[in-house]
Image: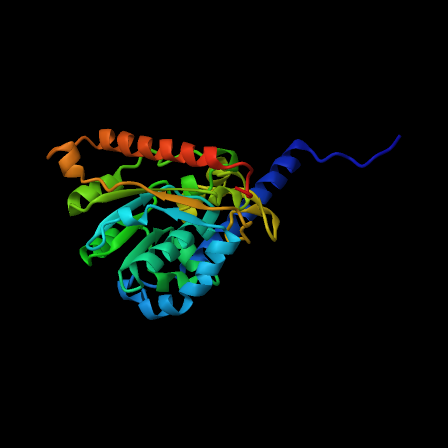
Length: 302
């Protein structure tokens, strides 16, 4: 029997290498193109008039599409700077952030300054420029410091892209990757810390892997500052590699629980141990997340 000749080992290696380079080139080109869209940080881009104008339509999305429940908003101090620290889910489209932002502005009023820190990629995605009008800022210590100094409530997600792209079967897991910068900032600025726990966002797509190994293979951290290249199954793409152009979230039920505020100096003393605070706060959040997970009957349905 005759058949086509199999490519030699060097040819296969060369072919694989070309494929890796092609994927890397596409990813780097996308990152550079999107990064060029990022405007400088401006706290005053948050637009109370725009929020008042659009709040009702986002309330409908939150209430009927995500069937959102946000509990405990009354625990957030009614005025002055405060740091909200949350777990984060749902890929780059941040559905839990949208739900919380709508609930916060409906409860406290559009005039109260509220900023949410997000990965720079989110702010540069096509069609999401309106997020800046709701107060979303690029995640950095300097932006957090500026917002708190302006008297704002600031929402920070220590888990970042590591947590937001975790596999869907880890939906009920807090994953801050050991980061303590949020604790240092709360101590530095002497603001109350309010834990916020959310569930449901990781059911808005089927998240398969963060893609750390793929990102390392493509050398994306050095070339484009990306530590992950997540893979998910999401609308409308089917297989979604990178989530670089976003996706349509499934209408998963999102529930958010606000916990009691913590005065770190009062609770942990003048010379607090960062690891003790980290373990206490994340442990408290993990227990709450387990309780929220126990309330759910089915994925997406809630």
